[in-house]
Length: 138
Image (cartoon, rainbow, N blue to C red):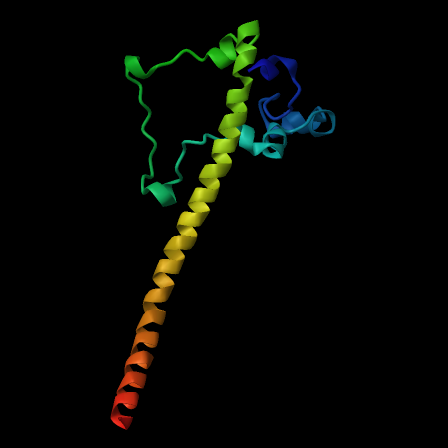
């Protein structure tokens, strides 16, 4: 929000792309999206589950009064005691990595679980036919 008035990012400075081009925004400023994408983990929610995993296509906000919280990290961030909360942001980034690995492992496990079903039938049949041929030799 502070950057809104600082004009550091040219992404939202003018009313149209044409106005931005006319004023050389790309040459004088950086894109907000490039800045965010450079360290995307800072902006990711570690508790978010993508639709393809959760099966939910719409995120319904919890807007009951009991669910509303004051955004202390933003509105009181300059207070000296708020500096103590910085390690929490690092923990959030660590959680993001753990959840990403967990999702990757879950997907890999699901793929592996579907693969052996076809392979087990083949190996079971070949083992069964081998045992039949061995028993016929006896």
